[in-house]
Length: 495
Image 1 (tube, rainbow, N blue to C red):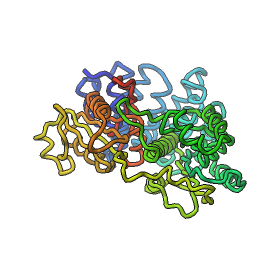
Image 2: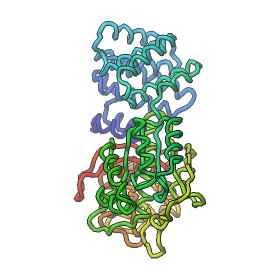
Image 3: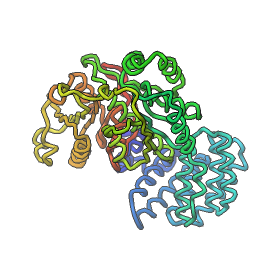
Image 4: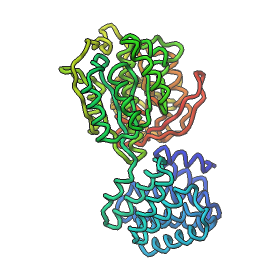
């Protein structure tokens, strides 16, 4: 019997069909006396409804509403009750929705301590009022809740998502929600060799940040453009999320100190100010990566973090880069351009030509590539798949494939899942020699695949962030942590 937390984990991983199948095969769908089972039933039916159309969509929303309502009947709480009210509306049962919404308002008035936080109390009241047609009251209640917890960004985003669905169903304009959206996320990057004393550069940076008002900045801290933009973001009150291609001291020695001692204290201050600092560490049997390819991977990870943060917060991802006049676009910036997200550039004269720092040499054999690992499909099964899925190498009882074409490997992984939903598959993106990958990377890919219960492709955090730029409509979610010989490894899923 599969437990409720295990099924919920599958649902969060973006595999509602498999989660529902396990929910039913374990007998949870027949339980009418367990509020947790009924709440999860409502969640799973809601997920199915979102993926359906027409009459099936309305029916599933209606069934989800009644599951949540039954949970609230067993254990009086505003969370399942407000979900029941909203889903009843989406299921085409407006009268039932209004009845449940009135019950929510009565519950909140009877129990001032109901709801998890003061924000959720106000937001739940706002949602109920919106369902009852009192948009003025809903606006006031939502504004009150946000004022009490102004930086609960993810909570605000969840509420906005619900309100968008309600207003769309009611045929009303949702433009007023924009004032409550969390601020944009900004990926930042740029050249080292600029004249930092040129007041026009800082003025232009400040103007863009003042206009766009990002609340979160994602990038590195090399001397030059990185530090100038990060300082402006910090001054404007934005959170700094820093990703470095090497440990702090090594990065400081390679990308900060050589360009003048005056950068060092500024670098140190920004490291201290960062809300989050991620380092792309190397495994024990790897040689140090060249600066060019290491910086490229760190940039891709920072871009993915920016896109994910904006997605979670229902806001917008943007990019700001400082380029040298006449420079060819770097690969990272072309990747961002392919996402169709906003990108702004400031073009400046180079103080010194430092382009060689980020140029790869012809002698380099390492590149950003992916290892696609399959743990329980034999060669006969692989041979029946399309050409791309057949080109695997054996590794004991498993098979793997390495490619620098990330999009193609993502497509192959989806083909494998369609062929066998129980396949245990991992996809690890890193810097490696495609012809001679480090044994530790193959071991890590193998460990992740063995940890799978099927239904999704497992990956690590770094790879998940890169996949944010590549994966199209696939769901990418954090699902837990795996203990390996090299330490704990955050696990993510691609479904």
